[in-house]
Length: 302
Image (cartoon, rainbow, N blue to C red; front, side, top):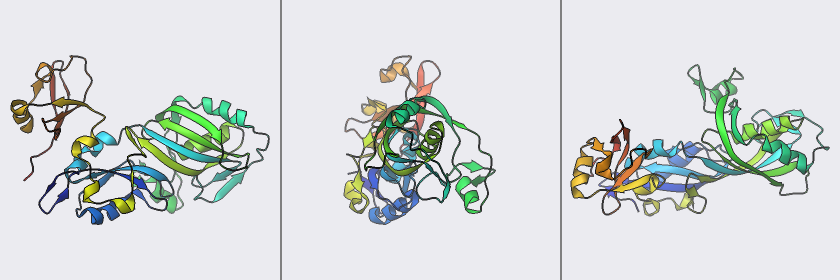
């Protein structure tokens, strides 16, 4: 488990399998009580009805969340053709219906191929994107709809599978995508591309970067013993092991030559600096041509 400082709870990472019906904020609030610390945050919001992998930073590891939020995501969802909703998912009110009985599985597969690669999405009104200083979901609750600028995202893969029941207008999608992708928007856009409409019937996040559902634990299992070491939170970064002399320089945030860390000139970074015991000391990033600087130095425990 992550080590802790007196009276401040543990430091580290918890990978939760978020249950349906909970907001990501709800999970954080519950986890604060289970972990005995106020210092809990999450990397990457999941919709209340969605389930799956949610990363929690605990204690000093909350400072590492900015290295986790940009990680790519993987999802499995069910798409219902022929019905549009106000929220683009099953939680909303039906706003339109379409006769799409002519659409075949092969049609859906062909349409899905057009969404693979760099695309643009218009954020849904029920999202946390801010427009004019207000979050879209706040405006939506007030019955206000505003213009939203499209945002670039990347769909790395989009696999279409038969749906879980006998309804020919329900199918399953497995998606690997960049951070910031709205799967509910993808479902709605697929419906439009097929000449009608659609909404997202269910959604499960199966991975965030290297963290998969196999790493995740139920919310009720969260506790100090479930906290992973801070180095686990940045296991997607290339590690650099620091000896005692280098660790002392890292502890004061010194700018270092790339050769000091054994790094190639063109290595992109960032890097996780760990001591001989594998404990995370800092995260460093490129600086000028031949140097690196601290992006984050973790203060020594008191």
